[in-house]
Image (cartoon, rainbow, N blue to C red; front, side, top):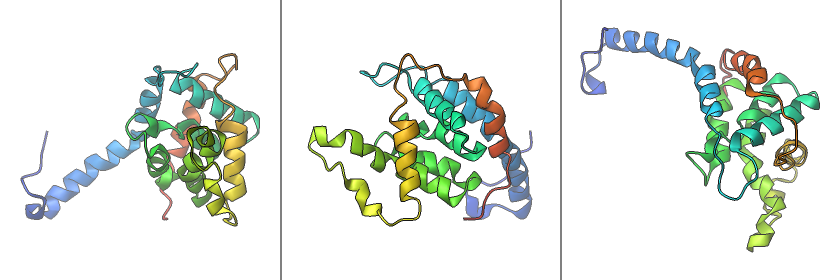
Length: 184
């Protein structure tokens, strides 16, 4: 396999960077498959929950689909907690960053902020301010984020809920991640 000649980026030539760009385009095309593979591995849970992270994601996305959300929002809902594994203290921002090139400003904002909005349901039990999300009152996506949390996220910890399998969401994930990236 052909490789670049440089050992420091500043020494790279146009030929080096054209080679890397070719490989990067192919790699980017595989993003949906890598996300699906990652999701399929979320079979463990944070100690104390009754369902796995994968099942929570599937329940959330199934609820969004059942409520006739568009494909973009269903995929975002499926992926909304992918940051839990590697960025537990800012998982929302992590998930939003992965989605950002492929989703609308609205969907990005909802996913980015859902962690703060979700605190409404539990943080007061731990001495925190459950109304922290109120700082966003008046924002054009405030109500949409409230609805996301209320209808799809906070309701999806039910071991008896019949969610769709990950395979059912694969075509939507591939569709969204094959889009030309938004310029945001």
